[in-house]
Length: 265
Image (cartoon, rainbow, N blue to C red):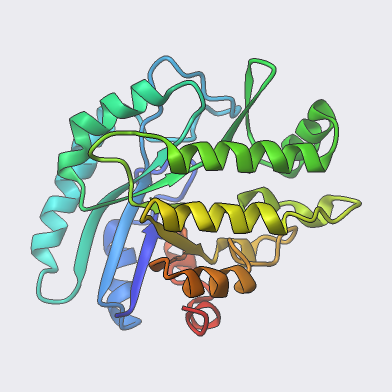
């Protein structure tokens, strides 16, 4: 089945205002049978978003409208395409209870969800590691070196995979090599092969799905999918369910690099 399982929406505060209809009509035109809208969920109210515009997730007071809009769109397009109501949930170290509470409240309204790591905790402060090249390089200086940042990322990612977030814990782990987003801005290549293998092994052990995310191919300092093709193949060997995701934040990016990725699925 032709599916895009990671799509953002006009509710994304750091995305575009492209309408749901633009995404849906494009998906239908491109022969997709199923799409999953997975907007960035509201962050815990007691968590301070470290990004300058405080725009990492939608506001809680927008969530009801988001769910209602998708409920209506599913009915409108029922004969043309399957639309899933989803969210991309942030795993934030130290905010597990808040995440459980959110999922316990809203999980029953979701068809799908992704668990992702964007924020890393170091010395009592959080950094959004994919925000910008400048932020990424400054964080490396702060932590000490690229290897230490990679290790911290994979440790946090492993914690997300093994965490008990209750009945509605997301079943899919998002962009597992997001730490590669600015890899070509580094003066050294970090060997994280074993870290990625360990992550995939635990995803398999926890009976979770893998977000095979094409967005990195469009990033000039990344130039590879999250994860790269050899690890997509490894995940397939392990029997992990693979779900393509374009991670589109505007309709123009919907299904980006699908043809390149699908040969590995």
